[in-house]
Length: 215
Length: 132
Image (cartoon, rainbow over all chains, first blue to last red; front, side, top):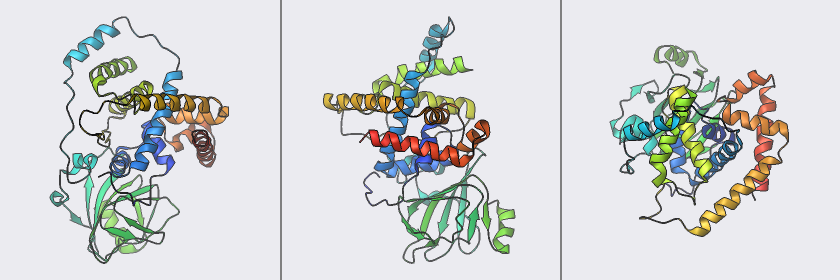
């Protein structure tokens, strides 16, 4: 999955830094890890951020540990399972496969109106990860955001008021963006999204749906 | 709790040592990533999805020249960080070790979120310049 050289929309530094520091909610970690598996450029940037963490770690003052720390550690080592080799490659990026299984065909979709379907993934509560299925030529209802929303294209392509996004691209949206993503005419579009606050739909109908469907 | 966590990190480092590749990360960076992941497991109680490790062909031994380059780059980064203005370095450190989001840092320091974001951006920009 790492030969996609035509990715145009990358992760922002702010998100990559927070990923490296371990400060993101699980839903955002998932989308970042999935994008990194598709994008060598962002993967290299993430490794650079890890090196900054490494330098900080090096310069941290030493703290002494308890007297039985070594004995405890040796006991832990004897109890821990050995290191496994790499898992076989899945048809979808590995980080995502851990949440949805090995194929996009196995996902249980729920309709959310206007032909669009979603599957909410099980992550920690501070942010929500979901897959969106947008049939070719369909639109996701016009919406704004209260927090940050990342959208990663897994299949097909969509366009909104800002740009066109194809496989591997990530759109970073915040409060200031209200958009109406529309899938390309030729192919259904599947995206992974992460939001840290509920989406804000701009017409009364989706807002009603929002109340019932929790999106 | 911190002590348990540190012991688990040491045990993981021991067990994963055969996977360490000195041409791709310094020892400190590698230990940092293991400690960070352990911290997320233990304190945030959530999973941390990670990209699959890239494999570079069968049983490739890291090249000595790659290891040396990485050591030089690490030293260059350490130098670049040591000359960052104090305010920027302090924020960067908080972003790494305070386990805080940028908005949480804003609350803790009393600085506006915009200031935090622009200071961090400046710091990263400087590091990037000096790594060229």
